Length: 344
Ligand SMILES: N[C@@H](CCC(=O)N[C@@H](CS)C(=O)NCC(=O)O)C(=O)O
Image 1 (cartoon, rainbow, N blue to C red):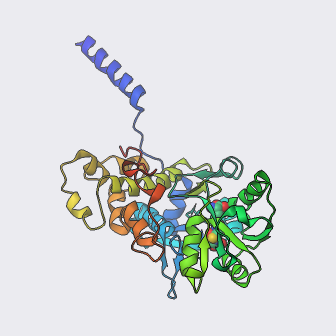
Image 2 (image 1 turned 30 degrees about the vertical axis):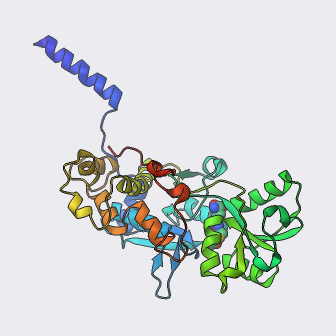
Image 3 (image 1 turned 90 degrees about the horizontal axis):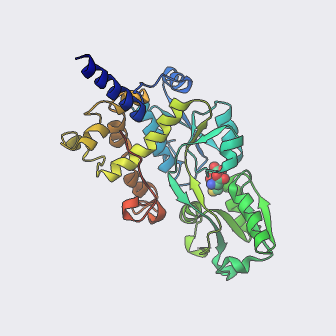
């Protein structure tokens, strides 16, 4: 008998060592503050259709807006408990560092120095992008190689500005940056001919071409991309639980797409016999407790904003004026890079 108990204890210990001991999350500083305040505060951009844009009534839409609403859905089971704080590229990191915002959901590229020296944590990628250039069609420029000697509008505090300098140097080209902080002013400078070209992440060029240019057909996005721009949410260092909540909220949106769970069928799916679906939707408990959230966290995310693919299509894909292809943002099972880590 003693031997059996000993074996069972040893097996339990081994299991604990191999699997890690299950410990529910302690409420961290950020989650406590967010709960007490009654809403999550997200830094977003000041207005790039597809990512985040307010309408005349102050209703925000976009991929980054959906992500913020998804975080509110996970924490409060209510996507309306999200406040959006517009930030320029220069303002965004100090806003996270100072605690003015709980999370940055604003087309921010994940880089080593941003993580290692700005006191920020990258929590995943919600859009794989690359830096491009837009020129007036009438200039006759069809390739980046023809831009030698050009003035190029660019926003300060961005990877865009750094890549532009690198590209010019590596290719022995003269590209004269015209550094302008506000995107509206960049667009005006481009339209008035003060800059020969405008450079930023190519998804933003696609968006600005159709939403900010009165005659989109007068503008050409050059075929070359000069960088990798993995865009995703960032949080402050030092609060692992909050980092986990943001990270797994994004992964839940991707996982819902992998599992074929949509805003329309999520209720039906709660009756699914599939254990993975049951765990995901909180029919089987565990994930919520591990994150310090209600077990309905992921169900509420999908109910509120849909899965990643639905959010993409609505905001920048076929259901939007921007009409971007999924490209790298397609699921890994269909040739893209979107891949949910196991939610278990
Ligand atoms: N992904 C790049 C660029 C991000 C960026 O700030 N892009 C500008 C160019 S359109 C933007 O979003 N502007 C909107 C704004 O200033 O609100 C980065 O993280 O540095």
